[in-house]
View 1 (cartoon, helix red, strand yellow):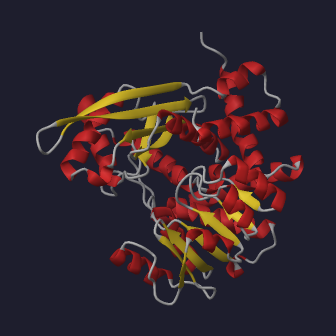
View 2 (cartoon, one colour):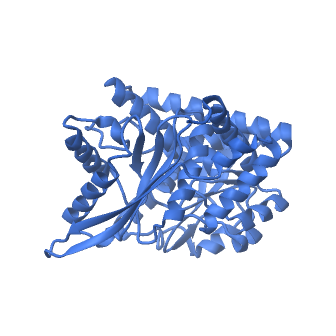
View 3 (cartoon, rainbow, N blue to C red):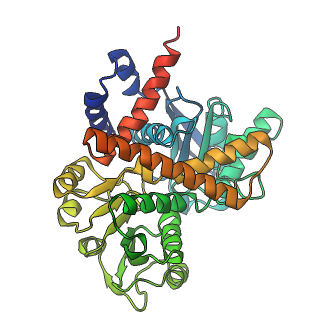
Length: 413
């Protein structure tokens, strides 16, 4: 069993101690509802045929259709996909949108595939999982090494299978293909809303915060840009090649341009260069891990100096690290709350696709802020009343809502 899924099960056990759910309900929560493994034969550009392995998991759909991204990565495993589908289940419930949790992936190195090979792989994968996805059943979205173009191919393939255009089968599509406005910045803007609430309850001045962001992709760079526009000092940024730090604050627009031109934040003028591990020991108020799973491990947790962690990536903190952070009194805002902005705006996109009626950017952003702030208050309320850490309180809110739906619906047959 995957280490991350074992962590999930341990966290469920911890939540069960507080919720005392009926055994028949708890038993449903610790098993994925449906796991599909598919073979994906693809004709390569040289005429040869390679077979890839793909997955789609629906962890629980008691609250609505499955929702979750599709990732293309050589290390994708079924256990990993199960783990992330469980996280999506709790995440959707925490922000109280009517979705269950799902996740998908293909074991491949997308960076080594041509545009045409990537399209052929995507279309065949869509065909293979087509029997369990759909706007009323399971709605995929972009994830690691998938993007708007991949979603467009999925939508087109599924639509060809049905014989008519089905925009609601995926979210995160190109803007001109029935997508929601503000989707690209959704996770970053959701993180800002959560950070505002965190600063409020901890009596920290929002604009006085010093923030380090680990990961400078879509989420990390977007968050840095949003915070910079709000006057918040982003003092450190890191990517897979290293980190840069300036205690006076980084010039984020220039850093984004530098990354675009060079492929990394390293080598940026007017900033000290260091390792990611060294950046994490710097004295800051908030660290936002916005890259890969397991980024905050035991070693990092022991050296971390920040007062607050706001998790911008999925599952970035290991179970061991979590225990150390609790002992140190670090206030951790968990991924299932902090990084839920993307799935909230995906929900908006799905609703608009079904209605064939689209909202203005300002409407989307305002509705996102409202949902994220309400979700934070729900979780923080449990944190205060039950005297548990924020991860446990978020899990209690999310798992509790899923359990409530399971209990109300009963068991068929």
